[in-house]
Image 1: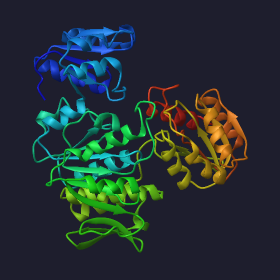
Image 2: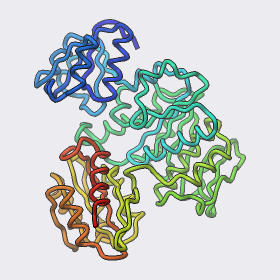
Image 3: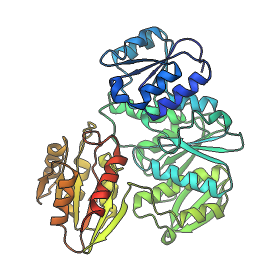
Image 4: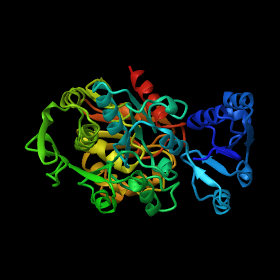
Length: 452
C-alpha cells in the first residue's frame, strides 16, 4: 500500500489512533476526521494536535475526503456513504488499519472470522501457539492493536487475528490460514444487505493462494459451500460426523480427531473439555485444525484444550447466590450468539436481553425462549421487537421492560428461585447505553456482585 500523497483517517478510536501515530512516524501528512466534536474526543484531540495532525469534526467531517488520495476508515462505519463512494469513483484508495497490518506483516497470519465463536476460537489459537513456544501476537478485533508493532514482528513468529466483516471489507490480502466458524445474519444496520455481509466474510480467503489453508465449518451449509470457491487447500471440521477428505477435524465416538494426509491423530476426549456447549465443540475443532496446520504439537493442543474455561463476557459464570447461578453473556450481540447461551445453560432461565438494533430478526431465539425461559426482562430500543418475536414463537411467560441494567438485575433477583439460571444474553449491540459490550458486561457483573 502506497502511503504517499494525502491521507485521511476517518474515526479516531483506539485502532485508528495507533494507525495515525504509525503514519506520522513515517512522515505522512494526515487529516483526521471524526463525527464527534473535539471536546468529546478528550485526550485524543490533544494528542492529534501534538502530532501535527489536522482534525476535522462535526456534521461535515467527511467533507475533506474529496481532497485525499488514501482514506482509512474506522471498521464499523458504512462503506457506501455518498462521500466515500464519491472518493472511490475518483480513484481514491479506501483502506483499513487491518489491511495495512496484513500488507506489512512478515510472519504467517492465522485469521478467524464468523458470526459467532470467533473470539473464543482466536483466543484458543493464540494460547495454543504460545504454549507451543512460538512468539505469538493476537490482534484484530481483540488483543493488541498491531499496526505500531507489525514491522518488528519477526518472520518466525505467528500472528492471530480475529477479523470482523467490517475489517474484511477493505482488505486486499488474506491470511495464510483462514478460519470461518459460521455465518448467520449480523450487522445489517451497517451492511446494506445480507449478500454484502457474506461477501465481506469471503474476503478472508478471496486473496489466498494454493499454498494457503482455509478451515471451514462443514456443519454450516453456507460456509461449507465456500470450499468450491477457494483457491487454497481446504480443511473441513464437524462436530456431527466425519466430513471426509484427507485433512479434517471431527468428533467420533466422543473423541476429538485430527486427520492430516489421511493419518488420524486422536487428540482428546470430549469429557476432558471444560468449555460448555455444543457451539464450543465447533470452536475447539476450528482452533485445533488451525494450530496443527501452523505446526503446533499434540502436547500444546491438549494442554490448552483441557484447561481453557472460556473468555470474558461469553457465558461467563459470575456467582452463585441463594442457589441461583448468574452468567454474563454480554458478548452475545446477535440472536445466533444468544441461541448458543440458551442452548448451553440449564432451565429454568431468567433472561435479560435487548439493546441497540442491528437490523436482525429475533425469531431464531424464540423456540429456546419458549422452551427454557421462565421470565424475560427486556431493555433498550429492541425490546418491542424481541417481545413480538418470542410471542410469535410460543413464549407465554411474563415479560418485563427494564429502564436500565440496574432495574433489570433487580427484577431478575426478585424473579429467580433456587435452581434457576439468570443470564444477560442481549442478542443485541450495546450502543444504546454503553460504549461496547465489554462495558455492558462489566456493569452487569458489578451489579450482580453487589447483590446481598
